[in-house]
Length: 105
Image (tube, rainbow, N blue to C red; front, top):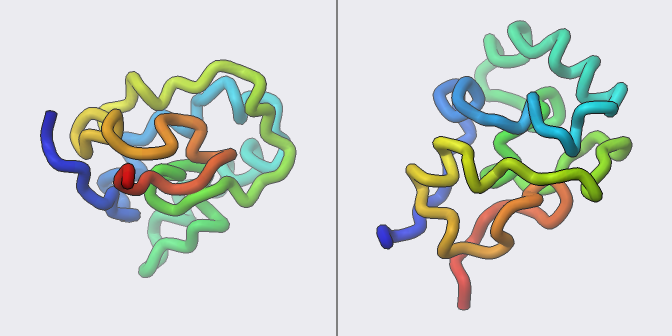
């Protein structure tokens, strides 16, 4: 297992993130709105976490409050999860609910 690294919040990770298509966010009107404006949001420097419906492993809990964390979390199959060795971090998944990834004590 590799070392856990801080996940950057940048256009590269936003572009590869599975969060926008996540079942937890599927019925969120807030996330739907953010996805409609995603192209405009990623053109900004710096990115504003409140405008990006994803990369919660980097930014922490979702700002949209109408997500449903009872649904399955696909974080474990995300390329970012593998690249940054997040299986050795906490929380392991559901970053939208539980906050950004951090090293285990």
